[in-house]
Amino acid sequence: MYAKPHCPSLVKVFLVVVIAIELALVGFLAFGQPSEGKEGAAAGSGSNEPAATQPTADPQPAAPAEGEGAGEGEGGEPAPEPVTLTISFAGDCTLGASPKSDPDYSFNGVYEQEGEDASYFLKNVADLFGADDLTVVNLEGTLTESKESADKDYPFKGSPAYAKVLSGSGVDAATLANDHSLDYREQGYNDTIETLDADGVSTFGFGRIAYRDVKGVKVALVGACALPDNPAEDYTKEMTDNIAQAKAEGAQLVVVYANWGIEKDYVPQESDMRLGRAAIDAGADVVVGSHPHVVQGWEVYKGRYIVYSLGNFCYGGNSNPKDKDCLIFQETFTVTGTEVAPATENDVKFIACSVSSSSKRNNYQPTLAEDEDAERILAKVQESTDKIAEMAANLGSE
Image (cartoon, rainbow, N blue to C red; front, side):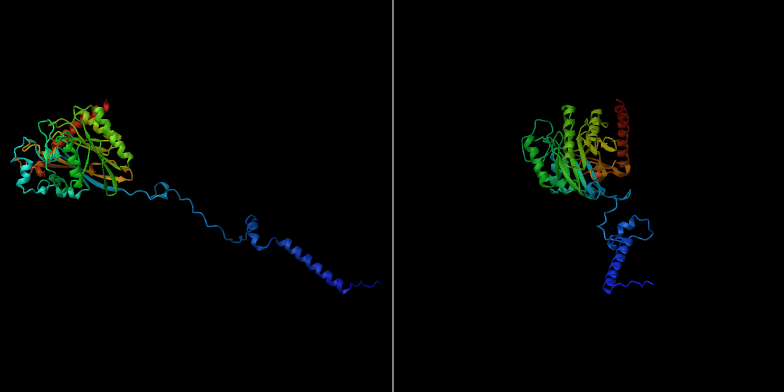
């Protein structure tokens, strides 16, 4: 028999070590890489075992679903909130008199009789003007000490102290774009601007745009003077250029106050209607007018109101005008950023007034009309408005 071979003890140790190494290598190959690399292997393996969770970079925000992000404007800025503001408009204010006026019954005479109390004149409407956000009138005449008048029948002048009639009663701005601003030539015109500016009343017209910050809204006030001896293309271009300038300078709401029409006519001319529409087409949000010394109606054009004549108001030009009816027009605007919402009938008020609290003469104290008087005045305005609608239909067919 052959004896079983014997390995020396050192050889046995060597063989054990080799076998152990081989077993370790087999285990390594069978189970893959160390645990920190398992995530990638498990992700595509089809195994039901979950992959190991590993720390990742900060997650990116998910894209907003449709409808999310409302209330944001361009560049992620918050969208502008709507702002509502109310503007009141009144007609011709002549704070003074002409050299032909009877001193006892003139504006100047009443001022003295009332103890030089400037608040007397607008006290019956001061609460209304104080409750709105902006009040605008047409100032026909000058506030100056100049004695050099223009060569005309009725140059109007008042003391610079009369500025308190406006500033002390809630009036914030006055257009000077009319046929009486130069009654005392350039000196009177410049004095009027300086006097009203010093009292906080903004002036505008003849290429001068006034800007008012009203509840955070930039409001531009543009004056237009459409007189028969001026070519229509000239005053239309000046007006539309001013509107464009106001828009370029960041105006969010553009107001146009126009001096136009024929005195004592209760219906506007077609040329007035074209001018009003040109203002809206150029970007104006409302157009109001005066000069005829009587009330006229209104129309809505492209969602904007055009009110053709508010009539006289605190009017020192006549101590006893035959027609004392006048209007205050109020509109509440909703402004969102640079957008102004179209006006509705709920946004406007036509407030019937008289130029005087006395029916016998003009005491230069505008007063709200009541009851039958108010109904009569508004019926007169409606009659004019109906005729304007007929004219508008003809304009639209041209």
